[in-house]
Length: 305
Image (cartoon, rainbow, N blue to C red; front, side, top):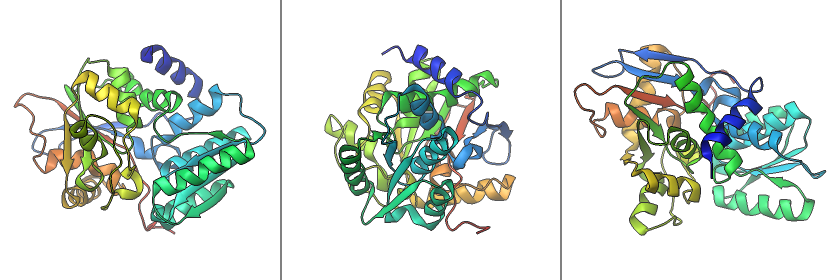
């Protein structure tokens, strides 16, 4: 697939529909300055709006509307994009999505079903809805339209003057890092970071391909896909992307550091990539310039609810 062209097209398609999120440099989060992109300031609090808008704007949506399964952030993004575009949407989320993300989806006006269990259980119900209602499935991470939409994030960051040698990016199902790898095409080093309790990518690389795993931990309601996407897996193998695993304690410490240093409030998943740097799991060379993609802001419980 010509990912560069697909991401360029996605950027043009979603322009005016998504936020051009700010970037900054911090000297307070690590021993050397670190570049940050604050994607938690995107519509609905995560990068997911990029893939959602790209998918809906590129498709001929059937009368049955759209359906999505989600740990929370993707569902909110699809619901938001559908509402903006006047498209009916039905969202299925697992109970572990939590009250904050469930309330966020409800505010869009989309149909919502909370499913007992995990993301995979919500996906099974979404697939049934797709078949029975003739709706279009909007996959959270393993679809070309989603991946191309998420790839616009790194493209935008480069337009904003990114000069880093290395970019650290959190991994759940693989849409964001997949899109980033697709756009980057080897120009700079990208490092994948996932929680120990949601190590879908590391497990896939160990087993020779995507496999189902159990998920747990503080970031499971955002990074808790049970199986890595095939698109991401293939791109990671193509580029030889390093994959690091971080413990929950490191994630929570990074979340606290962002708040204390800059009053940046993120959910644990949004601090996952920074955790690898602060905890010493990723150790840059002395002159290596490092950047971190801050990717999710849907804190639970909602501090202002």
